[in-house]
Length: 168
Image (cartoon, rainbow, N blue to C red; front, top):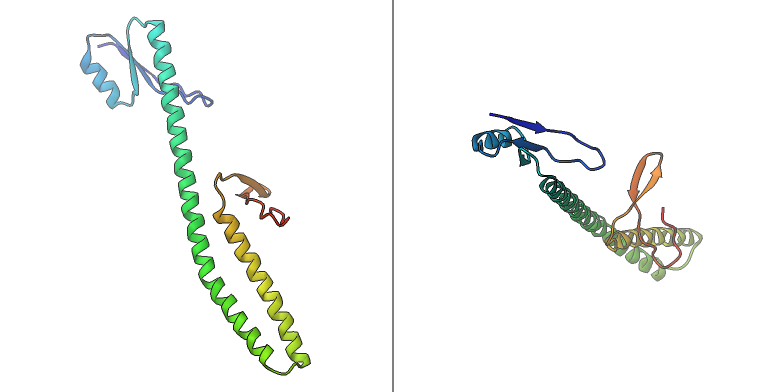
């Protein structure tokens, strides 16, 4: 039984494992696949067949890379949806309560303390709207791209909100 498993990884190409074997030894072919070969060539090697196998292998690797990228994007979109849901629920409860407090303050006679509370309510509502805007921008992400945040830390680059808000 003559067969050789060529297992050479070229980082840029991540080439597959090829089996080179005599054409009549089917059992050796099967054993080589059990040992990790991804494809085979028979001896003597035909250069056209070799080239075609490499091209096919690269096509498979490219398809696998695309599949992994699509899976990564699906996971990212699921995460964004979860974050949006989990933030929006309490956020809108807070905003609703702030609005009720504002209406209660407006029903009272104005005092210095009420003015201070009104300013605090304004600030809290503005910040809640800011959070809601960030959540909406997260939901608008269609083609996720990462950007460097701090050092080597990566974060999702959010689309511009159309109001001149910087991407941070």
